[in-house]
Length: 516
Ligand code: COA
Image 1 (spheres, rainbow, N blue to C red):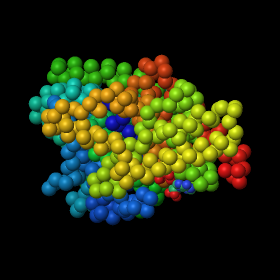
Image 2: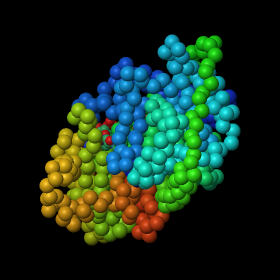
Image 3: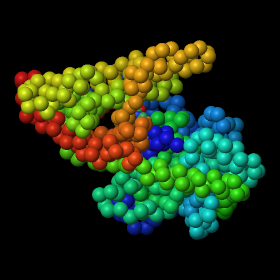
Protein backbone atom coordinates (compact mmCIF):
# COMPACT_ATOMS: atom_id res chain seq x y z
CA UNK A 1 0.00 0.00 0.00
CA UNK A 2 1.38 3.38 -0.87
CA UNK A 3 -0.07 6.12 1.25
CA UNK A 4 -0.28 8.41 -1.75
CA UNK A 5 -3.12 6.26 -3.03
CA UNK A 6 -5.15 6.96 0.05
CA UNK A 7 -6.04 10.50 0.71
CA UNK A 8 -8.22 11.41 3.58
CA UNK A 9 -10.23 14.25 4.76
CA UNK A 10 -10.35 15.08 8.41
CA UNK A 11 -13.01 17.22 9.90
CA UNK A 12 -13.06 17.97 13.53
CA UNK A 13 -16.73 17.85 14.35
CA UNK A 14 -16.18 17.24 18.04
CA UNK A 15 -17.34 20.61 19.20
CA UNK A 16 -20.42 20.70 17.02
CA UNK A 17 -21.23 17.22 18.18
CA UNK A 18 -20.72 17.84 21.87
CA UNK A 19 -22.95 20.88 21.58
CA UNK A 20 -25.87 18.72 20.51
CA UNK A 21 -26.53 16.89 23.75
CA UNK A 22 -28.96 14.37 22.37
CA UNK A 23 -27.08 13.62 19.23
CA UNK A 24 -24.86 10.66 19.95
CA UNK A 25 -22.57 8.88 17.53
CA UNK A 26 -25.30 6.83 15.91
CA UNK A 27 -27.47 9.88 15.41
CA UNK A 28 -24.59 11.69 13.78
CA UNK A 29 -23.65 8.71 11.59
CA UNK A 30 -27.29 8.35 10.50
CA UNK A 31 -27.39 11.98 9.47
CA UNK A 32 -24.13 11.58 7.64
CA UNK A 33 -25.59 8.69 5.63
CA UNK A 34 -28.71 10.72 4.84
CA UNK A 35 -26.50 13.63 3.70
CA UNK A 36 -24.53 11.39 1.33
CA UNK A 37 -27.77 9.97 -0.07
CA UNK A 38 -29.05 13.48 -0.72
CA UNK A 39 -25.85 14.24 -2.61
CA UNK A 40 -26.23 10.94 -4.50
CA UNK A 41 -29.66 12.09 -5.67
CA UNK A 42 -28.01 15.21 -7.09
CA UNK A 43 -25.42 13.04 -8.85
CA UNK A 44 -28.13 10.72 -10.21
CA UNK A 45 -30.26 13.66 -11.39
CA UNK A 46 -27.24 15.48 -12.79
CA UNK A 47 -28.08 18.57 -10.76
CA UNK A 48 -24.65 19.22 -9.23
CA UNK A 49 -23.69 22.71 -10.37
CA UNK A 50 -20.92 22.68 -12.97
CA UNK A 51 -17.60 23.77 -11.46
CA UNK A 52 -15.28 26.35 -12.97
CA UNK A 53 -11.53 26.98 -12.83
CA UNK A 54 -10.24 30.30 -14.08
CA UNK A 55 -13.66 30.97 -15.61
CA UNK A 56 -13.66 27.70 -17.61
CA UNK A 57 -16.15 24.88 -16.96
CA UNK A 58 -14.73 21.61 -15.65
CA UNK A 59 -15.50 18.01 -16.59
CA UNK A 60 -17.87 16.62 -13.94
CA UNK A 61 -17.30 12.94 -14.73
CA UNK A 62 -15.41 12.20 -11.49
CA UNK A 63 -18.63 12.76 -9.55
CA UNK A 64 -20.04 9.64 -11.23
CA UNK A 65 -17.06 7.53 -10.19
CA UNK A 66 -16.93 7.91 -6.42
CA UNK A 67 -20.09 6.16 -5.24
CA UNK A 68 -20.89 2.44 -5.72
CA UNK A 69 -17.37 1.77 -6.92
CA UNK A 70 -14.41 -0.22 -5.69
CA UNK A 71 -10.89 -1.22 -6.59
CA UNK A 72 -10.51 -4.94 -7.23
CA UNK A 73 -7.15 -6.58 -6.57
CA UNK A 74 -5.69 -8.54 -9.47
CA UNK A 75 -2.77 -10.92 -9.79
CA UNK A 76 -1.08 -8.68 -12.35
CA UNK A 77 -3.15 -5.56 -12.42
CA UNK A 78 -5.97 -4.10 -10.31
CA UNK A 79 -9.27 -3.00 -11.80
CA UNK A 80 -11.89 -0.45 -10.76
CA UNK A 81 -15.55 -1.42 -10.98
CA UNK A 82 -18.40 1.02 -10.83
CA UNK A 83 -21.77 -0.53 -10.00
CA UNK A 84 -23.67 2.75 -10.29
CA UNK A 85 -23.77 2.12 -14.03
CA UNK A 86 -25.09 -1.45 -13.76
CA UNK A 87 -28.65 -2.38 -14.69
CA UNK A 88 -29.35 -3.02 -10.97
CA UNK A 89 -27.56 -0.19 -9.16
CA UNK A 90 -26.93 -0.94 -5.47
CA UNK A 91 -29.37 0.23 -2.83
CA UNK A 92 -27.21 -0.60 0.18
CA UNK A 93 -24.16 0.65 2.04
CA UNK A 94 -21.75 -1.43 4.11
CA UNK A 95 -21.24 -0.66 7.76
CA UNK A 96 -18.21 -1.98 9.62
CA UNK A 97 -18.15 -2.08 13.40
CA UNK A 98 -15.78 -4.07 15.60
CA UNK A 99 -14.17 -5.43 12.37
CA UNK A 100 -17.51 -6.96 11.29
CA UNK A 101 -19.22 -6.01 8.04
CA UNK A 102 -22.95 -5.49 7.55
CA UNK A 103 -25.05 -4.80 4.50
CA UNK A 104 -27.57 -2.05 5.18
CA UNK A 105 -30.34 -1.26 2.69
CA UNK A 106 -30.73 2.51 2.70
CA UNK A 107 -33.86 2.83 0.54
CA UNK A 108 -37.47 2.00 1.32
CA UNK A 109 -39.47 -0.19 -1.06
CA UNK A 110 -40.95 2.93 -2.67
CA UNK A 111 -37.44 4.13 -3.53
CA UNK A 112 -37.28 6.89 -0.93
CA UNK A 113 -34.10 7.00 1.15
CA UNK A 114 -34.38 5.87 4.78
CA UNK A 115 -34.86 8.80 7.12
CA UNK A 116 -32.30 9.64 9.78
CA UNK A 117 -34.65 8.12 12.35
CA UNK A 118 -34.87 4.84 10.39
CA UNK A 119 -31.12 4.81 9.88
CA UNK A 120 -30.60 5.26 13.63
CA UNK A 121 -32.69 2.16 14.31
CA UNK A 122 -30.67 0.16 11.79
CA UNK A 123 -27.29 1.35 13.01
CA UNK A 124 -28.26 0.50 16.57
CA UNK A 125 -29.16 -3.00 15.43
CA UNK A 126 -25.75 -3.34 13.78
CA UNK A 127 -23.92 -2.15 16.89
CA UNK A 128 -25.95 -4.53 19.09
CA UNK A 129 -25.10 -7.42 16.77
CA UNK A 130 -21.36 -6.71 16.95
CA UNK A 131 -20.68 -5.85 20.56
CA UNK A 132 -17.20 -7.37 20.71
CA UNK A 133 -14.38 -7.20 18.13
CA UNK A 134 -14.20 -10.04 15.65
CA UNK A 135 -11.22 -12.34 16.12
CA UNK A 136 -10.48 -12.12 12.41
CA UNK A 137 -10.31 -8.53 11.10
CA UNK A 138 -10.61 -9.56 7.47
CA UNK A 139 -10.55 -5.93 6.28
CA UNK A 140 -6.89 -5.64 7.25
CA UNK A 141 -6.06 -7.78 4.23
CA UNK A 142 -6.79 -4.73 2.07
CA UNK A 143 -3.78 -2.93 3.61
CA UNK A 144 -1.34 -5.45 2.15
CA UNK A 145 0.95 -4.81 -0.79
CA UNK A 146 -1.26 -5.09 -3.86
CA UNK A 147 0.53 -8.16 -5.24
CA UNK A 148 0.17 -9.97 -1.91
CA UNK A 149 -3.46 -8.94 -1.53
CA UNK A 150 -4.12 -10.00 -5.13
CA UNK A 151 -3.03 -13.56 -4.31
CA UNK A 152 -4.88 -13.68 -0.98
CA UNK A 153 -8.00 -12.27 -2.65
CA UNK A 154 -7.99 -15.06 -5.22
CA UNK A 155 -7.87 -17.58 -2.34
CA UNK A 156 -10.44 -15.75 -0.23
CA UNK A 157 -13.14 -15.68 -2.89
CA UNK A 158 -12.82 -19.37 -3.70
CA UNK A 159 -15.30 -19.78 -0.84
CA UNK A 160 -18.84 -18.90 -1.94
CA UNK A 161 -19.84 -17.14 1.27
CA UNK A 162 -16.67 -15.05 1.18
CA UNK A 163 -17.26 -14.18 -2.47
CA UNK A 164 -20.79 -13.00 -1.75
CA UNK A 165 -19.63 -10.92 1.23
CA UNK A 166 -16.83 -9.30 -0.76
CA UNK A 167 -19.19 -8.56 -3.64
CA UNK A 168 -21.63 -6.90 -1.23
CA UNK A 169 -18.85 -4.60 -0.02
CA UNK A 170 -17.64 -3.85 -3.54
CA UNK A 171 -21.15 -3.11 -4.81
CA UNK A 172 -22.18 -0.97 -1.85
CA UNK A 173 -22.76 2.76 -2.33
CA UNK A 174 -20.06 3.48 0.26
CA UNK A 175 -18.72 2.12 3.54
CA UNK A 176 -19.39 3.59 6.95
CA UNK A 177 -16.75 2.72 9.56
CA UNK A 178 -17.92 3.01 13.16
CA UNK A 179 -14.54 2.99 14.83
CA UNK A 180 -13.29 1.74 18.14
CA UNK A 181 -11.11 3.94 20.34
CA UNK A 182 -7.86 5.58 19.24
CA UNK A 183 -4.84 6.24 21.50
CA UNK A 184 -5.32 9.10 23.95
CA UNK A 185 -3.13 12.03 22.92
CA UNK A 186 -2.66 15.56 24.28
CA UNK A 187 -4.99 18.17 22.76
CA UNK A 188 -2.24 19.69 20.58
CA UNK A 189 -1.68 16.29 18.91
CA UNK A 190 -5.39 15.66 18.36
CA UNK A 191 -5.55 16.79 14.73
CA UNK A 192 -2.52 14.71 13.74
CA UNK A 193 -3.97 11.64 15.49
CA UNK A 194 -7.30 12.19 13.75
CA UNK A 195 -5.48 12.42 10.41
CA UNK A 196 -3.81 9.03 10.86
CA UNK A 197 -7.11 7.54 12.02
CA UNK A 198 -8.55 8.55 8.66
CA UNK A 199 -5.45 7.65 6.66
CA UNK A 200 -4.65 4.18 8.02
CA UNK A 201 -6.67 3.57 11.16
CA UNK A 202 -3.73 3.57 13.57
CA UNK A 203 -2.57 -0.02 13.10
CA UNK A 204 -4.04 -3.44 13.82
CA UNK A 205 -4.54 -2.75 17.54
CA UNK A 206 -6.73 0.22 16.72
CA UNK A 207 -8.87 0.65 13.61
CA UNK A 208 -6.91 -0.51 10.55
CA UNK A 209 -9.00 -3.69 10.46
CA UNK A 210 -12.19 -1.65 10.60
CA UNK A 211 -11.83 -0.69 6.93
CA UNK A 212 -12.03 -2.01 3.39
CA UNK A 213 -9.30 0.14 1.85
CA UNK A 214 -10.22 -0.90 -1.72
CA UNK A 215 -13.55 0.88 -1.31
CA UNK A 216 -13.55 4.21 -3.11
CA UNK A 217 -15.26 6.02 -0.29
CA UNK A 218 -15.28 5.21 3.41
CA UNK A 219 -16.77 7.55 5.97
CA UNK A 220 -15.32 7.16 9.43
CA UNK A 221 -16.98 8.10 12.68
CA UNK A 222 -14.84 7.68 15.78
CA UNK A 223 -15.96 6.97 19.31
CA UNK A 224 -15.02 10.47 20.45
CA UNK A 225 -16.74 12.37 17.63
CA UNK A 226 -13.77 12.54 15.29
CA UNK A 227 -15.02 12.06 11.79
CA UNK A 228 -13.67 12.10 8.29
CA UNK A 229 -13.28 10.00 5.21
CA UNK A 230 -10.77 7.83 3.45
CA UNK A 231 -10.83 7.53 -0.29
CA UNK A 232 -9.10 5.26 -2.74
CA UNK A 233 -7.55 7.50 -5.34
CA UNK A 234 -7.89 5.48 -8.52
CA UNK A 235 -11.29 6.79 -9.73
CA UNK A 236 -11.05 10.49 -8.79
CA UNK A 237 -9.11 13.40 -7.31
CA UNK A 238 -9.87 15.18 -4.06
CA UNK A 239 -12.17 18.00 -5.23
CA UNK A 240 -15.34 15.90 -5.87
CA UNK A 241 -14.82 14.16 -2.52
CA UNK A 242 -14.48 17.53 -0.83
CA UNK A 243 -17.64 18.81 -2.50
CA UNK A 244 -19.46 15.75 -1.17
CA UNK A 245 -18.06 16.28 2.34
CA UNK A 246 -18.98 19.98 2.23
CA UNK A 247 -22.53 18.95 1.38
CA UNK A 248 -22.68 16.31 4.13
CA UNK A 249 -21.31 18.66 6.80
CA UNK A 250 -23.89 21.26 5.79
CA UNK A 251 -26.62 18.59 5.87
CA UNK A 252 -25.69 17.39 9.37
CA UNK A 253 -26.23 20.93 10.65
CA UNK A 254 -29.82 21.12 9.39
CA UNK A 255 -32.73 19.98 11.58
CA UNK A 256 -34.45 16.77 10.49
CA UNK A 257 -37.82 17.54 8.92
CA UNK A 258 -38.91 14.24 7.40
CA UNK A 259 -41.17 11.88 9.35
CA UNK A 260 -40.38 8.19 9.12
CA UNK A 261 -42.82 5.73 7.56
CA UNK A 262 -44.05 3.18 10.09
CA UNK A 263 -43.15 0.13 8.01
CA UNK A 264 -40.93 -2.46 9.70
CA UNK A 265 -37.36 -2.56 8.43
CA UNK A 266 -35.48 -5.71 7.45
CA UNK A 267 -32.61 -6.55 9.80
CA UNK A 268 -29.24 -5.48 8.36
CA UNK A 269 -27.48 -8.51 7.00
CA UNK A 270 -24.18 -9.57 8.52
CA UNK A 271 -21.54 -10.42 5.92
CA UNK A 272 -19.87 -13.66 6.95
CA UNK A 273 -16.38 -14.84 6.15
CA UNK A 274 -15.04 -18.38 6.38
CA UNK A 275 -11.44 -18.04 7.42
CA UNK A 276 -9.14 -20.92 6.50
CA UNK A 277 -5.81 -21.39 8.33
CA UNK A 278 -4.05 -19.94 5.24
CA UNK A 279 -6.20 -16.80 5.27
CA UNK A 280 -5.67 -16.49 9.01
CA UNK A 281 -1.93 -16.55 8.37
CA UNK A 282 -2.37 -13.84 5.72
CA UNK A 283 -4.35 -11.75 8.21
CA UNK A 284 -1.54 -12.06 10.78
CA UNK A 285 1.02 -11.03 8.17
CA UNK A 286 -1.12 -8.10 7.07
CA UNK A 287 -1.41 -6.94 10.71
CA UNK A 288 2.35 -6.99 11.10
CA UNK A 289 3.02 -5.14 7.84
CA UNK A 290 0.29 -2.61 8.59
CA UNK A 291 1.82 -1.89 11.99
CA UNK A 292 5.21 -1.32 10.39
CA UNK A 293 3.64 1.13 7.92
CA UNK A 294 1.66 2.90 10.63
CA UNK A 295 4.71 3.20 12.90
CA UNK A 296 6.80 4.57 10.07
CA UNK A 297 4.47 7.42 9.16
CA UNK A 298 4.84 10.73 10.92
CA UNK A 299 1.91 13.05 10.28
CA UNK A 300 1.63 16.65 11.48
CA UNK A 301 -1.55 18.62 10.98
CA UNK A 302 -1.21 22.30 11.74
CA UNK A 303 -3.45 25.31 11.48
CA UNK A 304 -1.44 28.28 10.28
CA UNK A 305 -3.44 31.04 11.90
CA UNK A 306 -1.45 34.19 11.05
CA UNK A 307 -3.23 34.71 7.72
CA UNK A 308 -4.80 32.92 4.79
CA UNK A 309 -5.50 33.62 1.13
CA UNK A 310 -6.31 37.21 2.06
CA UNK A 311 -2.72 38.42 2.44
CA UNK A 312 -1.43 37.10 -0.89
CA UNK A 313 -4.50 38.54 -2.64
CA UNK A 314 -3.98 41.92 -0.96
CA UNK A 315 -0.46 41.90 -2.41
CA UNK A 316 -1.90 40.97 -5.82
CA UNK A 317 -0.31 37.53 -5.78
CA UNK A 318 -1.76 34.09 -6.38
CA UNK A 319 -2.26 32.53 -2.91
CA UNK A 320 -1.39 29.06 -4.19
CA UNK A 321 1.84 30.31 -5.76
CA UNK A 322 2.66 32.25 -2.56
CA UNK A 323 2.29 29.08 -0.46
CA UNK A 324 4.34 27.01 -2.91
CA UNK A 325 7.14 29.57 -2.89
CA UNK A 326 7.03 29.59 0.92
CA UNK A 327 7.40 25.82 0.85
CA UNK A 328 10.46 26.18 -1.37
CA UNK A 329 11.90 28.64 1.14
CA UNK A 330 11.15 26.34 4.07
CA UNK A 331 12.81 23.41 2.34
CA UNK A 332 15.85 25.46 1.31
CA UNK A 333 16.32 26.71 4.85
CA UNK A 334 16.32 23.13 6.13
CA UNK A 335 18.55 21.58 3.47
CA UNK A 336 20.41 24.45 1.73
CA UNK A 337 19.38 23.08 -1.65
CA UNK A 338 16.19 22.81 -3.72
CA UNK A 339 14.46 19.58 -4.71
CA UNK A 340 12.11 18.31 -7.41
CA UNK A 341 8.64 19.33 -6.25
CA UNK A 342 5.30 17.97 -7.41
CA UNK A 343 2.06 19.90 -7.19
CA UNK A 344 -1.08 18.45 -8.71
CA UNK A 345 -2.77 20.51 -11.41
CA UNK A 346 -6.29 19.72 -12.48
CA UNK A 347 -6.84 18.74 -16.11
CA UNK A 348 -10.61 18.83 -15.70
CA UNK A 349 -10.90 21.57 -18.31
CA UNK A 350 -10.65 18.55 -20.63
CA UNK A 351 -13.20 15.75 -20.88
CA UNK A 352 -12.25 12.96 -18.43
CA UNK A 353 -9.16 14.99 -17.47
CA UNK A 354 -7.27 13.98 -14.35
CA UNK A 355 -4.02 15.75 -13.37
CA UNK A 356 -0.63 16.92 -14.56
CA UNK A 357 2.35 18.17 -12.59
CA UNK A 358 3.21 21.72 -11.65
CA UNK A 359 6.96 21.66 -11.03
CA UNK A 360 7.14 24.17 -8.20
CA UNK A 361 10.93 24.30 -8.00
CA UNK A 362 11.94 26.76 -10.74
CA UNK A 363 14.97 28.93 -11.51
CA UNK A 364 12.92 31.86 -10.25
CA UNK A 365 12.05 30.16 -6.94
CA UNK A 366 15.70 29.12 -6.51
CA UNK A 367 16.87 32.70 -7.03
CA UNK A 368 14.37 33.90 -4.43
CA UNK A 369 15.11 31.31 -1.73
CA UNK A 370 18.86 31.78 -2.12
CA UNK A 371 18.53 35.53 -1.66
CA UNK A 372 16.03 35.55 1.18
CA UNK A 373 18.40 35.11 4.14
CA UNK A 374 21.33 36.80 2.42
CA UNK A 375 22.23 39.88 4.51
CA UNK A 376 23.92 41.45 1.47
CA UNK A 377 20.64 41.66 -0.43
CA UNK A 378 18.29 44.62 -0.16
CA UNK A 379 14.64 44.01 0.69
CA UNK A 380 13.54 45.58 -2.58
CA UNK A 381 15.58 43.02 -4.49
CA UNK A 382 14.11 40.20 -2.38
CA UNK A 383 10.58 41.40 -3.05
CA UNK A 384 11.36 41.59 -6.74
CA UNK A 385 12.63 38.00 -6.67
CA UNK A 386 9.59 36.90 -4.66
CA UNK A 387 7.26 38.46 -7.22
CA UNK A 388 9.12 36.79 -10.06
CA UNK A 389 8.96 33.40 -8.29
CA UNK A 390 5.21 33.75 -7.68
CA UNK A 391 4.56 34.83 -11.28
CA UNK A 392 6.68 31.92 -12.60
CA UNK A 393 4.66 29.49 -10.48
CA UNK A 394 1.35 30.91 -11.63
CA UNK A 395 2.53 30.78 -15.28
CA UNK A 396 3.45 27.10 -14.90
CA UNK A 397 0.04 26.50 -13.31
CA UNK A 398 -1.69 28.15 -16.27
CA UNK A 399 0.29 25.98 -18.69
CA UNK A 400 -0.39 22.82 -16.66
CA UNK A 401 -4.16 23.27 -16.35
CA UNK A 402 -4.40 23.97 -20.07
CA UNK A 403 -2.64 20.72 -20.96
CA UNK A 404 0.80 22.16 -21.71
CA UNK A 405 2.84 20.59 -18.88
CA UNK A 406 5.49 17.96 -19.61
CA UNK A 407 5.04 15.10 -17.15
CA UNK A 408 1.97 13.25 -18.35
CA UNK A 409 3.14 13.73 -21.95
CA UNK A 410 6.49 12.08 -21.16
CA UNK A 411 4.78 9.35 -19.16
CA UNK A 412 2.46 8.71 -22.10
CA UNK A 413 5.42 8.32 -24.46
CA UNK A 414 7.17 5.96 -22.05
CA UNK A 415 4.03 3.83 -21.65
CA UNK A 416 3.52 3.79 -25.41
CA UNK A 417 7.06 2.51 -25.96
CA UNK A 418 6.37 -0.32 -23.49
CA UNK A 419 2.99 -1.06 -25.07
CA UNK A 420 4.44 -1.22 -28.56
CA UNK A 421 7.36 -3.30 -27.27
CA UNK A 422 10.00 -0.91 -28.59
CA UNK A 423 13.08 -0.20 -26.51
CA UNK A 424 12.59 2.56 -23.96
CA UNK A 425 14.11 5.80 -25.36
CA UNK A 426 17.38 6.84 -23.71
CA UNK A 427 15.90 9.97 -22.16
CA UNK A 428 13.87 7.81 -19.77
CA UNK A 429 17.00 5.91 -18.68
CA UNK A 430 18.97 9.06 -17.98
CA UNK A 431 19.75 9.60 -14.27
CA UNK A 432 18.52 13.19 -14.59
CA UNK A 433 15.04 11.88 -15.50
CA UNK A 434 15.02 9.69 -12.39
CA UNK A 435 16.19 12.65 -10.32
CA UNK A 436 13.49 14.89 -11.76
CA UNK A 437 10.88 12.31 -10.74
CA UNK A 438 12.22 11.81 -7.24
CA UNK A 439 9.81 14.21 -5.58
CA UNK A 440 11.08 14.95 -2.11
CA UNK A 441 8.20 17.37 -1.91
CA UNK A 442 4.88 15.97 -3.08
CA UNK A 443 2.20 18.58 -2.62
CA UNK A 444 -1.41 19.29 -3.34
CA UNK A 445 -3.90 22.04 -2.67
CA UNK A 446 -7.35 20.71 -1.81
CA UNK A 447 -9.66 23.62 -1.01
CA UNK A 448 -13.02 23.25 0.68
CA UNK A 449 -15.88 25.32 2.07
CA UNK A 450 -15.81 23.59 5.45
CA UNK A 451 -12.78 23.91 7.69
CA UNK A 452 -10.98 20.64 7.03
CA UNK A 453 -7.77 19.20 5.67
CA UNK A 454 -6.74 16.27 3.53
CA UNK A 455 -3.57 14.33 4.07
CA UNK A 456 -1.36 11.77 2.37
CA UNK A 457 2.06 10.25 2.79
CA UNK A 458 5.37 11.01 1.08
CA UNK A 459 5.99 9.40 -2.34
CA UNK A 460 9.70 8.69 -1.79
CA UNK A 461 11.42 7.31 1.32
CA UNK A 462 13.29 10.57 2.01
CA UNK A 463 10.46 12.89 1.08
CA UNK A 464 7.48 14.78 2.43
CA UNK A 465 3.78 14.81 1.62
CA UNK A 466 2.28 18.28 2.01
CA UNK A 467 -1.43 18.90 1.56
CA UNK A 468 -2.98 22.26 2.30
CA UNK A 469 -6.31 23.96 2.35
CA UNK A 470 -6.04 27.76 2.16
CA UNK A 471 -9.03 29.38 3.84
CA UNK A 472 -9.53 33.16 3.78
CA UNK A 473 -7.76 33.91 7.05
CA UNK A 474 -5.90 30.72 7.92
CA UNK A 475 -4.34 27.72 6.19
CA UNK A 476 -4.69 24.06 7.21
CA UNK A 477 -1.60 21.97 6.51
CA UNK A 478 -0.95 18.25 6.76
CA UNK A 479 2.75 17.43 6.52
CA UNK A 480 4.00 13.84 6.51
CA UNK A 481 7.35 12.07 6.47
CA UNK A 482 8.72 8.64 7.31
CA UNK A 483 10.15 8.00 10.76
CA UNK A 484 12.60 5.53 9.21
CA UNK A 485 14.34 8.37 7.35
CA UNK A 486 16.90 10.26 9.41
CA UNK A 487 16.94 13.23 7.00
CA UNK A 488 13.27 14.16 7.21
CA UNK A 489 11.04 15.42 10.00
CA UNK A 490 7.44 16.44 9.44
CA UNK A 491 7.28 18.71 12.50
CA UNK A 492 10.43 20.56 11.41
CA UNK A 493 9.11 21.16 7.90
CA UNK A 494 5.76 22.31 9.30
CA UNK A 495 7.58 24.73 11.58
CA UNK A 496 9.83 25.95 8.76
CA UNK A 497 6.75 26.45 6.60
CA UNK A 498 5.11 28.64 9.27
CA UNK A 499 8.27 30.74 9.62
CA UNK A 500 8.66 31.09 5.86
CA UNK A 501 5.08 32.33 5.43
CA UNK A 502 5.38 34.80 8.30
CA UNK A 503 8.77 36.06 7.09
CA UNK A 504 7.51 36.53 3.53
CA UNK A 505 4.57 38.58 4.75
CA UNK A 506 6.89 40.68 6.95
CA UNK A 507 9.15 41.30 3.96
CA UNK A 508 6.20 42.49 1.88
CA UNK A 509 4.89 44.71 4.66
CA UNK A 510 8.27 46.23 5.39
CA UNK A 511 9.01 47.04 1.78
CA UNK A 512 7.05 50.00 0.45
CA UNK A 513 5.13 49.10 -2.72
CA UNK A 514 6.29 52.30 -4.43
CA UNK A 515 9.80 50.94 -4.59
CA UNK A 516 8.74 47.73 -6.34
N1 COA B 1 -4.14 38.83 -7.26
C1 COA B 1 -5.25 38.71 -6.50
N2 COA B 1 -5.96 37.55 -6.38
C2 COA B 1 -5.49 36.48 -7.06
C3 COA B 1 -4.32 36.54 -7.85
C4 COA B 1 -3.63 37.78 -7.93
N3 COA B 1 -2.53 37.93 -8.65
N4 COA B 1 -4.11 35.31 -8.38
C5 COA B 1 -5.11 34.52 -7.95
N5 COA B 1 -5.95 35.22 -7.17
C6 COA B 1 -7.19 34.75 -6.53
C7 COA B 1 -8.02 33.91 -7.50
O1 COA B 1 -8.86 34.73 -8.26
C8 COA B 1 -8.79 33.02 -6.54
O2 COA B 1 -9.85 33.77 -5.99
P1 COA B 1 -11.09 33.07 -5.22
O3 COA B 1 -10.62 32.68 -3.85
O4 COA B 1 -12.10 34.15 -5.17
O5 COA B 1 -11.51 31.91 -6.06
C9 COA B 1 -7.80 32.77 -5.43
O6 COA B 1 -6.87 33.84 -5.48
C10 COA B 1 -7.07 31.46 -5.54
O7 COA B 1 -6.26 31.43 -6.71
P2 COA B 1 -4.86 30.67 -6.71
O8 COA B 1 -4.30 30.64 -5.34
O9 COA B 1 -4.00 31.24 -7.79
O10 COA B 1 -5.20 29.17 -7.01
P3 COA B 1 -6.29 28.47 -7.90
O11 COA B 1 -7.60 28.50 -7.21
O12 COA B 1 -6.23 28.97 -9.30
O13 COA B 1 -5.74 26.98 -7.82
C11 COA B 1 -4.45 25.07 -8.40
C12 COA B 1 -4.47 26.59 -8.30
C13 COA B 1 -3.14 24.62 -8.96
C14 COA B 1 -4.62 24.48 -7.00
C15 COA B 1 -5.65 24.65 -9.31
O14 COA B 1 -5.43 25.16 -10.60
C16 COA B 1 -5.80 23.18 -9.46
O15 COA B 1 -5.30 22.59 -10.41
N6 COA B 1 -6.53 22.55 -8.50
C17 COA B 1 -6.80 21.15 -8.48
C18 COA B 1 -5.73 20.42 -7.76
C19 COA B 1 -6.19 19.04 -7.44
O16 COA B 1 -6.82 18.35 -8.20
N7 COA B 1 -5.84 18.64 -6.22
C20 COA B 1 -6.24 17.40 -5.69
C21 COA B 1 -5.31 16.33 -6.03
S1 COA B 1 -5.89 14.88 -5.27
